[in-house]
Image (cartoon, rainbow, N blue to C red; front, side):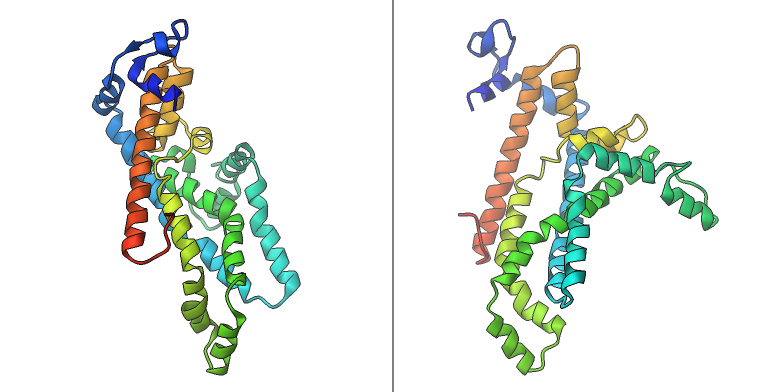
Length: 271
């Protein structure tokens, strides 16, 4: 919090934080009036919402499916296979993605060629960037994310399932009427936390997947802050700090708003 005041000053390293001139909202206004503002906000929000909507159900579906698997060897094998990608570093993961989507030697384009279709240069098409980013992220994290749902399912009273079986309920009915309500408080908490990180897309994976051809849809707030704050010759620490502070304030507002909605609907909430 002490360093956050850099956003309101023209910070220079020689003068320090307290010695730098106070300029108020100058850097915030500069960002709001910049040519990049609309595009950055649109790309960041679309990527976050896409990731949330597409990625949120899959860990729940995987956890519900694994919960009813009786074969222990098969269950452990699926868990290991789905958990493993989470422990691959971002750099290696992006390298795998680029190799798989390579227009000449990638396995995806080889399959397309075998089907009589023309190879596609996926990473040069701006409209495909978000889908590649989101679905590769789901593949990498779905197994690890379902662990918490498996733990929640383990806490459901077995007598509820026993009574449902006696009444002739199918597995789908038991999932819908017992398992989903049982894990719903956990799901709501995770949804609130994910919504509170709406503008925190992160820059590592996005930056590694960026190229001049897809920059129109791949430039997000985090990569922009990294570029203007650390890689540009001007080293705009105050400007990048103002953008980061703006992003944090918006995330806080979203977190409080979604938590309040959860309280109004009598669902689980953070406080």
